[in-house]
Amino acid sequence: MKRSRLFLSLLFVLGLCQMAVAQSSVDAMVKDWERSKAYTKEYLDAMPESGYALKPTPEMRSFAEQMLHLTDANYSFASAASGEKSPIAMGASEKSTDKSKANVTKLVMDGYDFVINSVKKMTAAQLAESVKMFGRFDMTKEAAIAKCLEHQAHHRGQTTVYIRLAGAKPPQEKLF
Image (cartoon, rainbow, N blue to C red; front, side, top):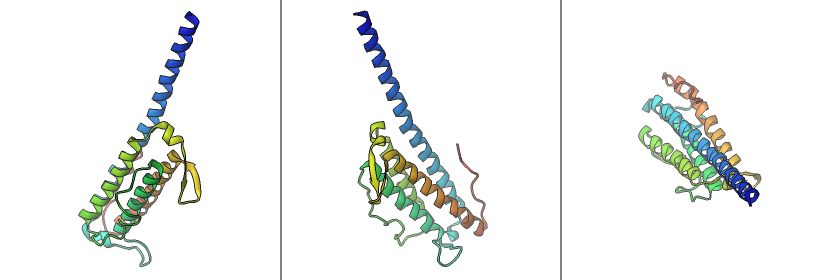
């Protein structure tokens, strides 16, 4: 009798530990996305209004288009990984005709909020589920969210040059 109680108690404690570890994974992802949102906001703020149309070369995206591109990807990746319906159509942000600083900032911040809120609703079990991204890449939902984080960091990083070309100073690195 005592052994079975001890065994059940041990299983219960192990279950609680597993739930705590799983929740910490979701919490860590949310923390990374909140940091990335704040860092991107610093980039948006650092670029003068006149620099939003800046293109280092004619074939490149403008600063605004880079930021809107990463926003479209944020919606696409988060929607595919979480199952949440994206509130915007694929590519709609970058196609926006209003590329003013105020509008781009709003659209970009809304995109980050979508990712953060989508991740907050996920469980560790959902993060471990498989998803096929873009119809050809099999990965876990957690990996898809991580790829999205990588993608937005890549495009935000590219805009460092744009900010310098506009004569402004980019924000300090924000790893933690």
